[in-house]
Image (tube, rainbow, N blue to C red):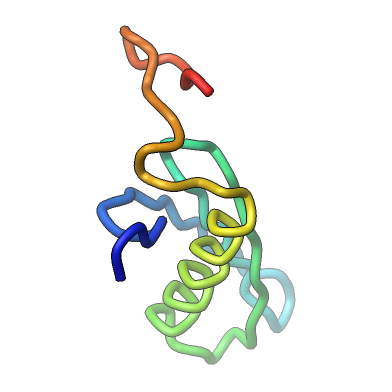
Length: 81
């Protein structure tokens, strides 16, 4: 899909056990937008990661983030809106 905010983007995932659940945080490196999902501790890690990535792509779409909507500042700090 053209203009897909998840295409060619780098995400960081963090997995933390919380009792009988796993908390998965997904962060878009470029924008710093973060989403969190929870799942049973026995769920496969790649399934939780895929769920978190899909939720993050949805959030990026809601925020109006497109590949051409933000320009990185020189020096790599922040973005020009």
